[in-house]
Image (tube, rainbow, N blue to C red; front, side, top):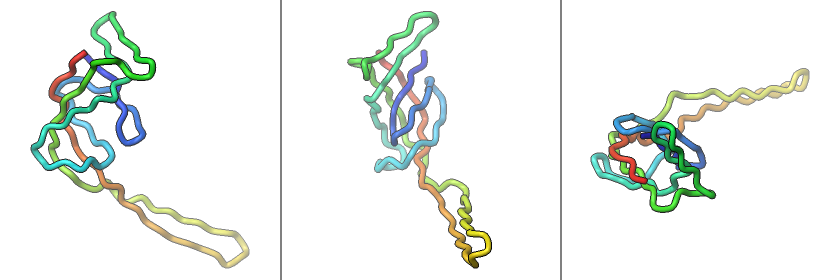
Amino acid sequence: MYAVIKTGGKQYRVAAGQKLKVEQIPADVGSEITLDQVLMVGEGESVKIGTPLVSGATVKATVVSHGRHDKIRIFKMRRRKHYQKRQGHRQNFTELRIEDITA
């Protein structure tokens, strides 16, 4: 069984037992959270597609850890204008382990 969920403005295809890094969620490590924005649930040939959400479908996940992604470097330059700007950014994430999908 798999599901397509929406969290942090992004959509993810998840299955039970899978680990996933999503945008930071304010939850303690080891706590169980419920993701209720389920867009699609599929099992074999049968697929339920929501309009926009599947009613009654939830995904239970456990928070494994919090962290920060690798640094990305932003470099802006205007040629012949003596303008250069360097900047870096590290995005926070929450790592989840998908426990159960209920339709």
